[in-house]
Amino acid sequence: MNPCAALSALPTGVALNAPGVGALLRELVTGVTEKHRHMMIVRGLWRAEALRKQHELVQAQGRAIKVTEERACSHCNKRVGPTAFAVLDGGRLVHLGCLDAATAEMAGIAVGR
Image: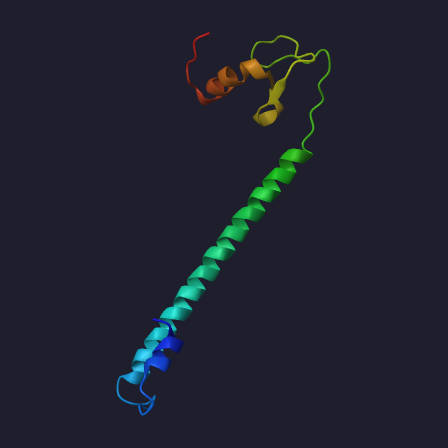
């Protein structure tokens, strides 16, 4: 219950220091402040996660790779040329068609060709 609503629900003749009234109001206020504190912590955690993801994105966007005519796919060893490609961890370059097999190979999963 909202502490303000509890105060307005009290009869006008009841003193705040009456037995039980002060304890009830204290409990209501404590509950509200604990809920508020919890929400502030959750909000801070979400902000930290968003900042971490933004940092990862900036690092990924800042990474550059040089693709020349001689550059070969690390999976099939054919030249990449003007085809679509992907970059794996460690700067490994693969054709987009080789991507699934290359990631499965990195994970140690057998994939038939």
